[in-house]
Image (cartoon, rainbow, N blue to C red; front, side):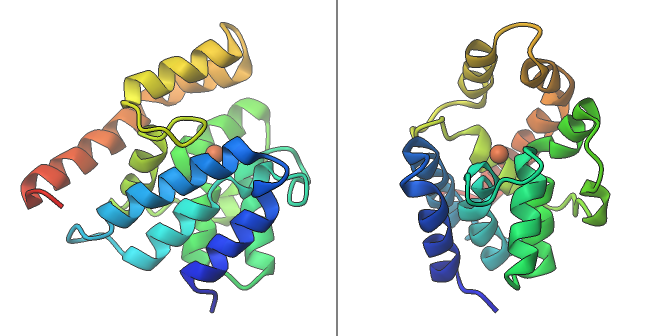
Length: 182
Ligand SMILES: [Fe+2]
């Protein structure tokens, strides 16, 4: 079974050269995930592995259909990653909403576990900017809308997905507040 070091090496191999900002982003997400992994009710290994792997589907080495959550998930499944890690990647940050807008099928081969661990992954993606910088979720979503522009599919996805993304962030914030500083 792959370790976090294996996962990080795979992310570096697929992203660092081709998409250096994306590589910085996933390192930022993994850093945040490592902190949140200390919270009770969060499963450390699936979270930190999914964090560093969640965007590998953008890599030209990995991309097949062009829908990065699914391409990443399939690539990982073929390499023996735990089904839980694969499913967390497949469903990260409301990917099912985007799949529906794009008319992509196949995501339902994986289950969205809708857990504290999954919320934490969505949280980490929402507080890490496109080059790994720490941002607020509102800055993150404004940045996405700004990069793609009104009417773009990604902007329409965000309009539709924002309540679910915000809910995952708020649940994670509540878990952090209940636990005290980590
Ligand atoms: Fe992503």
